[in-house]
Each structure stands twice: as C-alpha cells, then as structure tokens.
Image 1 (tube, rainbow, N blue to C red):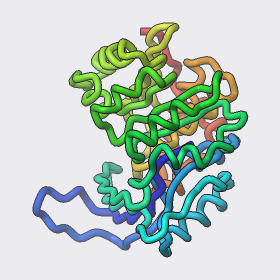
Image 2: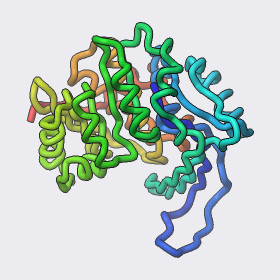
Image 3: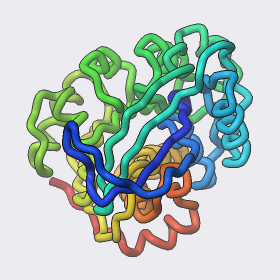
Image 4: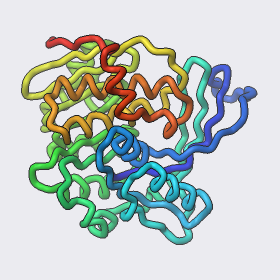
Length: 305
C-alpha cells in the first residue's frame, strides 16, 4: 500500500453546515487516518500482510502516526520522516445521518515523488497486490504502478478524483471509484446501477482491466472481462461513512491476493465497507476478518447485469 497518512480531527454535528454557517458540534476526536494508511490497516485487520509506503512530518502528529502503523500490525519500515514539514491533517465533520465533509491539509504527503518509491524498493518483493490512491502527487503514483512486480494485481483507488488519473488507467488492473469520482472521470452523471455501468464501460475503454464503482447504500457495480456484476449492500445503521471506501479497497486487495473470483471479491469488499459505516472514526471502523466472515450471510446475492 502506498499513499496518504493523516491525523484525522473529527467532530460530530447534528447536520453538515451550509456555506458561511457556524454550528455547534460535539467533542473533537483525534484518530489516525489517511487513505493509504487506512487501506493498509484494513488489509492487516483482514488477515493480510500489509506494507506501507508513506511520508510523515517530524512533529507530534508524525510520531503518533508512526505508532499507529505499528499498533495496526502494518509493516512500516518504508514510512519516511520528512524534516521541517508538518504531517498531513484531515478536518472531518460527521453529521448524525453519517454523511461527512473532509478537508485535507496534505503536509508531508505532498512531498512524495518517484524517488520516494525508489527508496522503498524492498517493499515490492513478493507483493501479490500493489495499491495506491491520489492523496499522493501524480508522479509518485505513476512511479508506484510502474514499479509493481510482474504478475501482481495493481489497484488504483482514484480518490480524491482528478482528471489526470485517466492517464494512469492503462497501468491499472483494478480501478475503484465512488459515484462522484466515476462521474468526474467518465463524464457520466452516475445516479444508479445503469449509469454506474456506463461510467465503468468508459473507464475500461481507457485501458483499465476492471472498473468498480461503489454506490454507498446500493452496493457496488463491477465491470471486467467476465462482464458486468451488480453487488447489492445490506441495510445497516449508518454512524459514519468516512472510511467505508478504504475498508472496501482493503478488502478487495485481500480477496484478490487470496485468489478469489471477481464476484466473490466484490461481495467480500461490500461486506467490509458496510461494516465500516457502523462505527465512528476512520481507523476504529475498519473491520476484522472474523467480523466480515460472520457478516457475509447478510450480504444479498449479486447478479449479472
């Protein structure tokens, strides 16, 4: 895994504020986060071996984040400390209905480049899956995907979305995007399964092997060489959706590393993402393998479109 590692500053609010509005929230909670670190932690909690490439600052937040990597049983030998630079911070408001807004101050994350990947060459040895997202600069993610070992599955979670990600798709075996990200990249108004599959088809046409569009409460759609697959999600009591996408991505990585079929991997990922919505905070919400395995019975059967 490679990418963002942040200190999340989370506050619960009755609802999300409108532009220019001040509202009262509850107590501030500080938890480790960042999509790269969250996805690595998700892999580790699901029983996979996770190695993390990331950058932190030489500050209190960076030291806390380094401890969190160890606590999550992630191999953090390739987490580098950047002198004179603050660690990444995410400012997160979570409404009582589980919706959220997130502002990221990238700090050390923005200093990643091709040399960051080169310095972590040992992390790629024997890797079955290499995954990144867009909390790192474009050049660093491009270098990551190009450095992936032959035969490994390369996953890009194109979040936060930017149009330049289209230039990476020919390097990617699996693309994971949510409705907003799929809409931006494919120029499709994604509002249901049919439009999500339309967006996935456009993205596959750009060279990606498999395109997965997550649809929140409606599950996910997958388009790959075997055709379209629709995977519904179960009804859950939503507390916080902040790390649902990271749980989904980590679970998909574990399933692919285990050699599971595409549709089985999608079902496993939806189970993990759904469970993550039921707990407040990014890192605390990431489920264990036992909890996902026990939850699979509640996942509706998927179907071919």
